[in-house]
Amino acid sequence: MTLRAWLMATRPKTLVAGVVPVAVGCALASTVTTLRPLPAVGCLAGSILIQVGTNFANDAFDALKGADTPDRLGPTRAVAAGLISARAMLIATAVVLSAALGLGLYLATIGGWPILALGCVSLVCAVAYTGGPYPLAYHGLGDVFVFLFFGLFAVMGTAWIQVAPDAAALIAAWWWVAAAVGLQATAIIAVNNLRDIATDAAAGKMTLAVRLDERGGRWWYGLLHVGAFACLGMAHLDGLGGKNGLIVPIVAAGLGGAALTLGVALNRGRALNRYLARSAALQVITGVSLVLAMSI
Image (cartoon, rainbow, N blue to C red):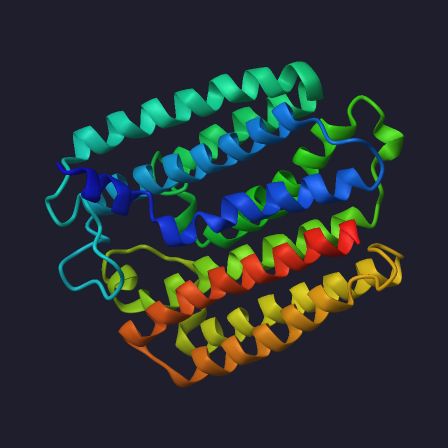
């Protein structure tokens, strides 16, 4: 068990899905209030811990269920490769999620019961994503999980912690931005599952990509980017952003999404690994442009 194996198990290239929604949530809140740094850091740390805990649990449970095998086309998984034992990975999952719980209790003192409830559900779903009696990812619900927890809930939860207890400060148009962030995060898991269709199907892991088949999975990936583009357009029409509105994020999401959709349509197997990284990169680019649009 090396440090390198543990770092690999965190899946660092995908951690942007936990960082971007918090940054965007803070940017949205900054348009109506003065940001509170400590709660912002707490949200960021909590989001990353939940994502790492989810990744650790996924690494262990997928190996135990036979979904991760030597035939997988994606990056090496620590437990399946024998680098870390399943027991050690599950212990690490418990430690990481316990730390997230501690942060959640602190944030609940600011955001109240909605944050407490959201935190508890997030922790349960982090394990239930691939573990428990009804693993979400094995029943085609992984995409829904990502959209909600790395989109709507993460963005709006962060914004709420900044403006609480003034519920009137929340702006309805923020939901459009939160949805766009969630759709781009979902695109990351969508291309991951598209790549793994064959091995997932063989292991009985009925992801949405397996259910849709390769052609449907590619259509789904493209629709996620179209949806993100449309949601940002709606937020722009609702008047969000500085003097130029959300033009730059819209262009980034539109052109980037179109290029990635074309690339995913033309590639198969291991070639899709680079589109996993590029999908994450597009979310970062869009997220940064959103933060800047709210600030200028």
